[in-house]
Image 1 (cartoon, helix red, strand yellow):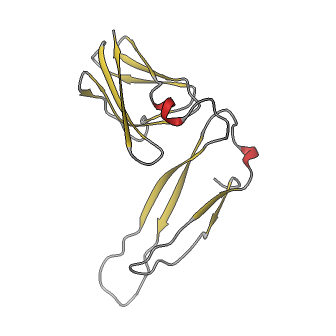
Image 2: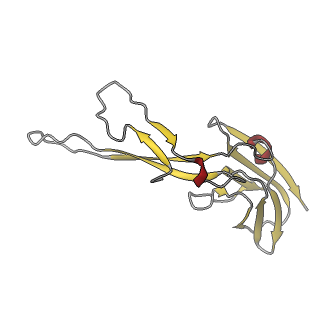
Length: 161
């Protein structure tokens, strides 16, 4: 994200029972694609205070947050895009086409109630791209749920013959 965003404050001390806000501001939108969303990852690291005279264990944590930059004037709404993936079969592969300008962040994907294993490597359908998933099912009802802009889940289904 270097050179694309200004993140302030870049370092702060968190006091017990308090909170801090981080502001992420676009420096220049000339560096982003205009016809689709762009995806970045924001890493927030917690470095524990070190006190030499105490016994115990210090644990550092890292939070990784998906950060989507959405240009103005895209051809459809995000909620409409989430319902638009096209599902087909090619042998033992489920082929999923995302012909929208949005990232579709899958929470679940099933064929005839059999779950397809999703992980951080395959759970995002990128704009204007095709993804494949191995499966033994070759027809039936495909159901998928996506994380929406508010963090909730939207569910959809499509019958494949």
